[in-house]
Length: 278
Image (cartoon, rainbow, N blue to C red; front, side, top):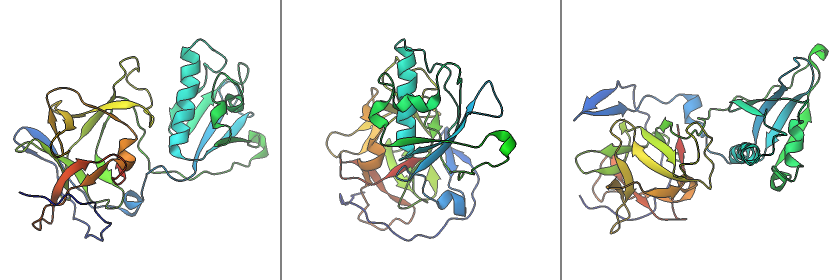
């Protein structure tokens, strides 16, 4: 099939009914479920992001609300903290990420709010992060933060990849053509791994990381076709920037009308649309 190499525009689409999982040609295939109001809410990282931080030795004092300019800034801040510890600066070694919106720290070793003022950690983020000291437990007031529908970006985890502007559209690896397609009724799971082997599995992935993409069940390397810039099977691991999901991929729509199979995913640095990991 021929395809039109053009940038897409946002479309209004019908929501598909619930569908079960199935297996085709030995590949696990996930059929797209009905989208709930929560899942249709875009989880991309352009809005303010919040987290709690709790002193691990005390259940009543030194509790903070952390406000980040974006979710990406939250991940970058935590990477800066863990990198400083790995480099031998142990003041914040007890800062731990319990979940995407919950951290613990040891106030006796280093107050977590000092991570953005200490020159060895994250001073560059000083204008993009701030800490608010919450009331002590016995004062009985707790500021409630919104629970956000995010997947944590963890090295070695597997994700579905979804369009932000068309949240019923997913990446699907088609085994018959060895090509990644934009699809409305099928999706594949892809494993995201940091290319730097020094980064342990389980580490948080940030935008500046180079990553490898493989199919989760069969381990097929995903790379870029040199002639048409389509994403397809690669003989060797192919590294891209993690931030590419924000701006480097778009749909090369088929010239013919295909209601579910929209066309191949095309790489065009800086000229793509936003995709999110779910």
